[in-house]
Length: 460
Image 1 (cartoon, rainbow, N blue to C red):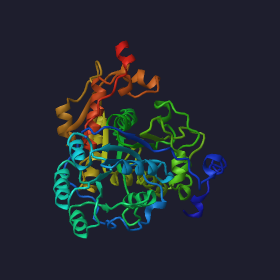
Image 2: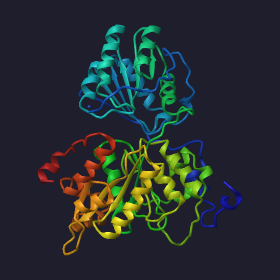
Image 3: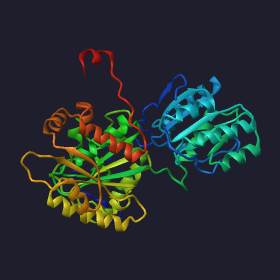
Image 4: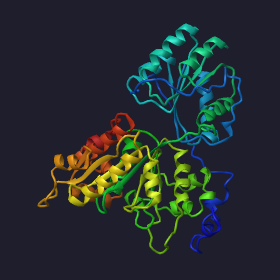
């Protein structure tokens, strides 16, 4: 950062001297969540093509184990209670503080049944004491139910170099043979996700409005909730509307530190600092709120945005950016660098013009990516002339992924209560539309919400 950009005024100069950020060598990490349950089936998709850079038969010393793991999901399908116990010990380690770990008995057959009906985790650990031929047959069967991006670690019974090579050729990331210590497991897992030559990078989803007041922030916030609580993937929401952001209000959070603290000193915003700046309304959802004040005009360099966004992206599978209604170099660069772009419009002429300009430009700059997705919000306002959906889609060149009806009572109630619409009325058309969008973006199904006995009695 150049000298003219390195300093900021007195309101922010002490932001990194406060207690939450001063003790950087001892980050406050939540204890990993770990559940041991009976074997049960989970959905997934196709292909088992994890990294081919394995470290060999359980005796290598990967270099990534001294770094914090990102917020990944790990599922272990074990045969021996000792293996489950070992992973439970690993889950208490500070380096795995953000990982969510689940242990299921039954080995590879249980994994096949589970993956055939449930989403694929970031890391699949499977244990098998079968012969090499049987292991390979079961791995081939498992591959039919897994996402291409999954990383697979096999815990085998024999130190067989031929089996190792055959597993690697099938896309297995690592093959380990007992006995091993917790630190070896942690280092092997960390090396798969924190390898400096191939760092873990989460999926970046940018939400932007075609004009002011179309509800882009509402869509971004509810999408983040749907991803984390209904799809069950770890998600971070970053509010980049520094002056007028509503994330803290919508989620009813008081956040003394905000994304501005990181943007004003990006060279100091490493993963431990970012972790401390985040608010956590739920176990799977983290928030990087905006200061939402006009007391301080912040002149943020373009590079600071990319530095902070990349820092967050390395620590979570899904990142949702709530972008302000503006146009600048950093906005364009952020949209172009995103895995998915969602343009929120109303069915009116201004949204059509602005949305088409944005979609056309992004299509040209992202020729190999999915076209920007269109969300039509607040459709059907009484007595308001609207462009018909068919005509709007034909003119803008994109079919809407979802159309949300005008429902001021539902959205107003949720906003006033600091809730998401899925919490207020999960059966509403708007909540179901947002869930559908989340499923489309992840390729995963929405998990049914559990109702407690008392809620059933109350008819909720």
